[in-house]
Length: 189
Image (cartoon, rainbow, N blue to C red; front, side, top):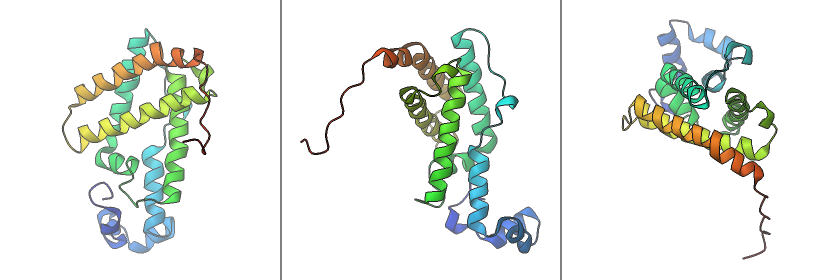
């Protein structure tokens, strides 16, 4: 229901009715609607345990195709709920939701580096930042496919695979050998 309507438009009574349980049971297990929503957010953005995901083998292109296929299967499984949760369409600017999303993004960045065969970069801030930027593309492309139907799954797959392969073969190696640029002082103008 959170994927179908805005958070505020979903009542606990409706949730209980759709689940076929008494409202008190939802309150017993989750406390209130917001706590249930936080549980849904955690479920949507939590990756399977590392030992439950096989690391793809083969050429970089074959690994990338496998990774992107897995990402799109995950998005398709949760559909509009995944899109709404990952795009902050739920309860708005909620610090707890943001914390859950940030933790999930960090875990996903680390997992992606492992899956692309670069576990050695999991502690590299620039590498993690590049993967987090890629995650933003995944979220927008997922929304365009699932919600707006402006892209097909095949088009999203190609976009994400091409981008990820470029990151692995060109961008990450380039960033790692580039000297960091000095940061501008806040007082300079």
